[in-house]
Length: 436
Image (cartoon, rainbow, N blue to C red; front, side, top):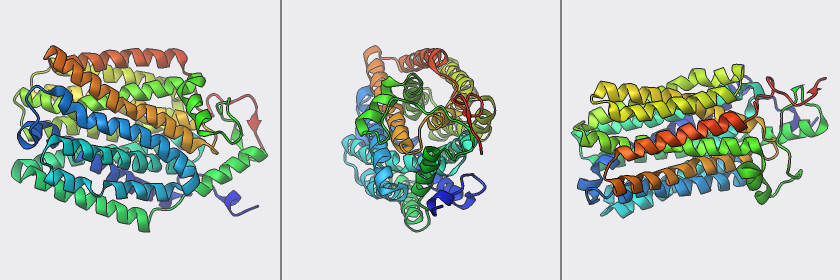
C-alpha cells in the first residue's frame, strides 16, 4: 500500500485540515461582504453614478459574475495539476489591489475593474475551500461538510456587510472599506501560505481505490459519458448539458444567483429609496446572510439524511416566496422577515446542490466538474445583474427585478423537480455495492 492509498477520509479524521478550510472560507466571505451594504448605496454620491442609471449600477456585479464564473472553471482544472493550495494562494494575490482601488477610485469604472479582481479571488479561493473539503470527507458527509463550508463563508459575508454598514455611518466610507479589506486579505494570504494544508493527495488515493474496487460501501452513481482521463471539453459538455442530472443542477445553481444579486445590489438601493438608513439596510441584508449561513448547520446534515433532491427543490421555491414578498413590506421588520425567509430557502438549496454535484463526480475529475458547475452557477451573477439592470431602467421600477427573480426561481425549481435523480449514494446507490 502506498502512502497516498493510506489516506483516510472523514471529517473527524481530518479535523485539522477541515478547520483550516473553514477559516479560509470565512475570510473569503468577509472579502466579498465588504461590498454588500455600502458600495451600492454610495454609488451616486461617492462615484458619480447618475441617478436612475441602473445598468451602470449593476455593471460591477456583471463584471464580477462573468469573471468569477470563468475562474471557477479555470481553477477547477488548475487545481488538479497544481494542487488546491497553490490555486488558493493565487486567488489571494489577485485580491491585494482591491482595497487600494476602492480607496482611490475616481469613478465607478474603477469599482467595476476592482470587481474583476474580486471575481478572480472568489473563483480561485472559494472554489478551493469547497473542493478541498470534498477531497477529505466521506460521501455520506458531503451535505454536512458543504453546509459547514457555506455557513462559515456566508457568516463572513453577513458580518462584513453589517460591520461595514456601521463603520461607514460613523467614519469615512472609503477609508473604512480600505482598512477592513486590506486587513482581511493580508490575514487570509498569510494563513493560506503558511498554514493551509494540501488535499489533492486524498483525491488521488480515493480515485485509485475506486479503480481497484477496494472502496467500501454503497456504489456512487458516477456520471458516465467521459473517458478515464477526460479532456476539458468532455467535462464541460458533461456537466453543462450532456448528463441530465448535471444539467438540472447547473441551471438551478445559475438561477439561484439571481437571488444573491438582488440582495447584493437591488435590495440596498430599493430600501434606501424607501427611506431606510445604512444601518437598517445592513441589518436587513445581514439577516438574510446570517440566516442563510446559520441554517446550513442543519440543512447540510438534513440532505445527508433525506437526500439532495427535495431539500433543493423546496429551497428554491421558498426563496421565490421570500423575494416576491419583500416589495409588499413597508417596515424594517417586514423587510427583515422576507429576507429571513429568503435566507432559509438559500440554506436549503445551496449546500445541497454542491453535495449533489460531488455525489456523481468521480474523484479523478471532481475538481473539474465542480468548476464547471460553479462556472454556470456564478455566471448567474452576471446574467441576473444584467437582466435586473435592464428591466429596472426600461420600466423605471426597481420592483421589476423582484418579479423577474421570483418567476425564474419558480421555473427553475420545477425543472429540478422533474429532471433530477436522487444522487445520495446511500439512499440511491448504483446497482451492487462495494463490499469487503
